[in-house]
Length: 152
Image 1 (spheres, rainbow, N blue to C red):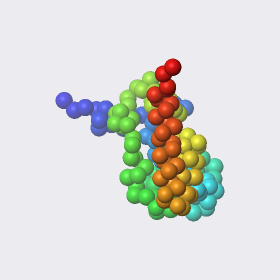
Image 2: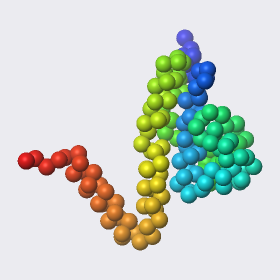
Image 3: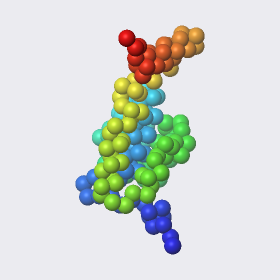
Image 4: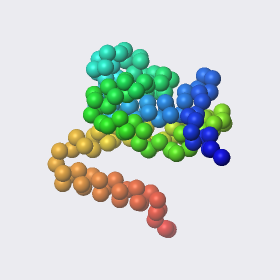
């Protein structure tokens, strides 16, 4: 018996982006933001409008293979980067309920938040590796204190 969920890509639910398109678009946004590149600059580099980049990044419009290759060149990553971290279940979704669950998971993904991206960019702008290591240690210590509140 052939597992059709594994061989057929998820269908697009009317009015909702395909979960794979959402993931790929979020990876475009992640890389663009980490590079400090605006949507306008990316759009100019690939001959599009920034509105089209917005649609790609939200997953509203599907990115074709030639365009994805173009993005990989401009953003200096392999094409596989855009699929990295994609949950296995995203590729096997079959129902409207599953499509909504994946969209909700995307919205809550901490790695796609602007705050996270800005923090990472600011961290890597610290040129002194000793200071950067101390900042890293500080953040880890603060986070450990949050998960293990003092007993009193």
